[in-house]
Figure 1 (cartoon, one colour):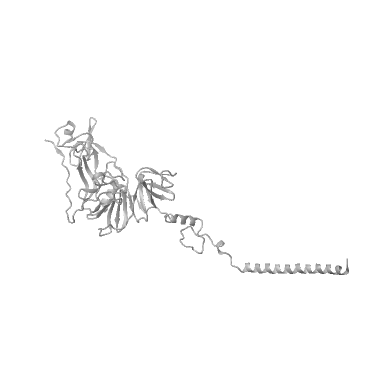
Figure 2 (figure 1 turned 120 degrees about the horizontal axis):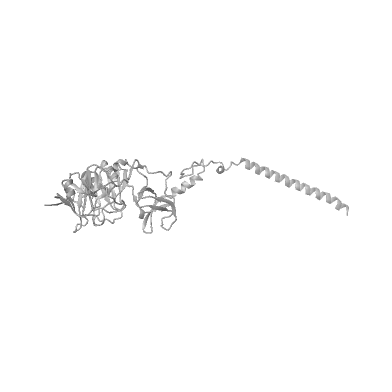
Length: 409
């Protein structure tokens, strides 16, 4: 090794060590600057904000995080559900309203004689008159007696007739409201399950609805030939087994106050508005076939706590009916009336001779509320019911005529 090479070797080592020291100083200064920058930077607020209380937040609240339950509520709101989801502001009316004002008895068999006394009825004496054969015949009764397996009843008029006392009048009632709901609602007309989608092929939710159970309606879609009502998140009920009451507080054209009765022929519902607010609603049964209830705007011109209704509409009188003691009748369109029924019927289906049938408790509530001159708006949103020829304004109400019973000579 030369002398020069021996001297250069230590110098290279020294320079290399100086270079390492310089690099270390630079790296230390950079780390110090980065640490200072991190310390000066404000903390990210996202991770420091608390969760918002569960609720619907249409805009960012800024001081909390609308996550968790609030996200679920937002998804429900986007699907049309309010928050919070509330029960209908309604209750069943007083059950005592369903008590009939008179007892009734059902007549069966062919033409039935009416007698002046119980002895005449038992012995088959001279009859005052007869009640023609028919599918639906009832008389009022204030007393009854039995003889030889036969039952006779005394009517309010004091006559005696062979009939069977009738005790099973329906007691279902609609709803009395203390606040107008923000959405539609409805009732089942037959027992039914609910479905997870608007389809009979969809899985059932596991919830079963009894007949005449009420539910809320948050959305309506048409599928498989029926309307489907969204009664809750992922829960649908078909119109095949239910009826919807459309809440509409807008007075019909021609109503000059905020008080009217609305009869929906398509949905078979009746709703009552007072001061523009929904105060009562129920299922009904209106006229069927050619005896449909006439659409139009009418007013109540006569009220009768008890009424007698008789008639037939076929040439052979096979459809004759004789109904004594029909409760709480309110006439609004000639012989068409809203009234209570004590006989068995299915609400939610057209089936009357033109009148609007209600269960006793509902008719009683309406009778107490209604005043002569109150508006009655009969309509069919589907447009399927023919509109009658309008009656000229100022035409007197048509006299109510009842067929007379057949006299015996």
